Length: 175
Image 1: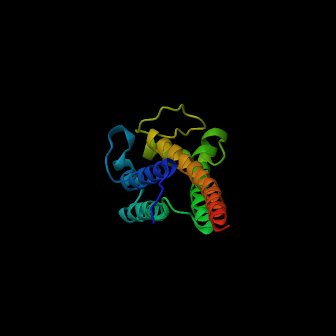
Image 2 (image 1 turned 90 degrees about the horizontal axis):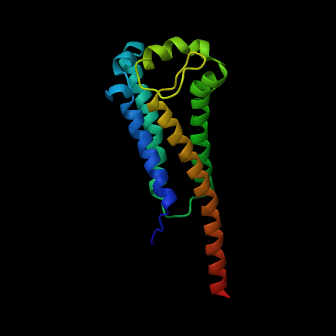
Image 3 (image 1 turned 180 degrees about the horizontal axis):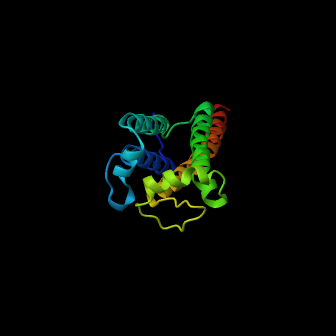
């Protein structure tokens, strides 16, 4: 069976690969002004860092594998739902951990000290609000995650239309 891999699927795959790499390197590999691995290591044990890295990278490796398996094929409804729900759930966590405290101050008090310790010496292009400044590396991750969600929704919606079109062509050929 010949696969028709769409550009949107290639973009989604690229975004998911970026997120896997982000999850592997963000706390462990020095990236100059983009992260502060020493500060992160002072706030987390080695076991915590390994677990956090494995969970973060593992779930996105799984998503990447699913997308690779179904690229150019019809995504079953349960796969489409799972891909969207999983990524949206992670994005809700991102909103709660970073953006709601940043914009509205809700939960900021509990995070300010820890965020400043771990991310205070990292590059950021946003101004401080409510004592929090999302750093550039995390902001890039959040933007790519949002783009992956939008691409997944697009692929899911257009994938079902493609399936309907294929069925109509098949039915027309049978008649």
